[in-house]
Length: 371
Image 1 (tube, rainbow, N blue to C red):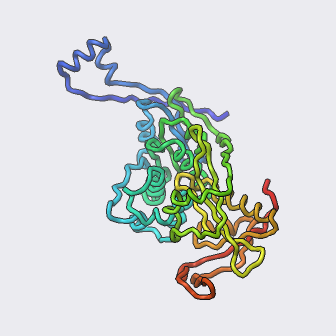
Image 2 (cartoon, rainbow, N blue to C red):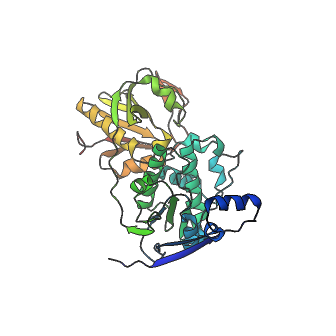
């Protein structure tokens, strides 16, 4: 077992004496020095010379988490960013190319292009969290070995926190942010389960734990029907909001707080001119559930159902990150690419389509049932 050095940090505060301060201390019968000075002992967290990618400093408020992070990773403690209320998210990363930026956002679960075209203040809590993480790792962390993010997921509901932590760990496993490492600082113990840090410094005991925990399996239920839920997903789809009446709709739900909550939407329909071939008409995952693999799992489940019915499923998309995932999968085969987009036709007549936007089409070639 690797030995761990013990560290000590002394926290000192200064206050002006007053009548009210003296009355407060008198009621508590505590010496002023004991109130203003605190000594904390803890196991030293790993240095940058050791092999790790994601670390976690966990503990209740006042446990000294931020002070410890400042002592060991002070230059990497993220100070935050003043987001402009008048500029879209994509316009606030001047040193990054558009493709690089979109890929980074998609890797942490913010693959919704409409969201990236909005100002920061209009986004949901989960979307803001992902923006802050990308800003910290992509810009602030560009010249740093470690980025430490305080209050990690603290302002999120725990469902959004779970999805954000899972997506971020997946991004680090794919080496999206290069050599930069992350130290998350939080009072929420559930983060350890979903983030799967390589080490955790638990300030309730001051002890360091090494090794990734095994993430629990996420479960979702799939239902056919539910066109009434489309308005809930329409805002986050990168195409227009129309839903073809001939489409067949499926909803994925998650059980939370004792009730089923719709979290993903997919609609399929007949591919015009191709007998026995269906196509994906709409596929949307709620922003707070993006980045955990739900979209790909839902797409595979529907492709299997279509296969059991004697047909095959195709999907055409311009989402570069999603297309790369399909290209890496043995279950999908590239059948066509359109570097400059394509013109759609309706009843034999051309109509505005995706001209000017690169597209690719993939067809399901996987097994009838995934294991």
